[in-house]
Image (cartoon, one colour):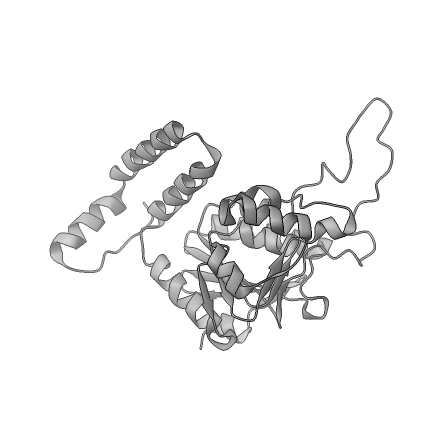
Length: 274
């Protein structure tokens, strides 16, 4: 059993970090709060993802939650966690809430693959964080929702934008307008997640998937993630152009030469990220 699965990693301000070869496992660790994100956890997430990006040995990250919840979103019960809305300074129109970085900002800036292992309920900002990950697999007992409409708000960390791409406009509108939670089975059928597993085997599958990814060429993984983002961010013609540009850059790398040589020699390639 993996160290990260056993949850024996380093504890830092609401998160737990463990490493297994080229895999980093980041566990949201406030189970008594259903892993809701307070300011300290938000800062720790930003620092962790920046560190993983800079650490060449890390090829892929797993994001999961402790206990029976993935993440209940922003911790609204923690004093000071949500900025107090007040009149902007004279001569300005800035709103201190609107100008605050998105909860998903560390994931938005991250260049490597991220697997969300959704072990339980993911609502509000928790689901927005999952939507910012590249691959989402879930426990069969998990539930999902963007419930902000029920408190007079709306998802403001990419939820309205990413959900449409994940499940289509009609189902996204239904989830957003009703604020109701959906089951794991509905999440799978809609495309919100790609796999369902029994809770006790979810992390094993997440690590198995991460190991497959981590064995591949790291520069290719980063380039593919850029291309995937372009599929939703750019017009099709611009996406094609970026894809060809990334392909051309990869042909000049040592890993590309190693990959072709290993194929000819019928052996496993030794990728170095160069």
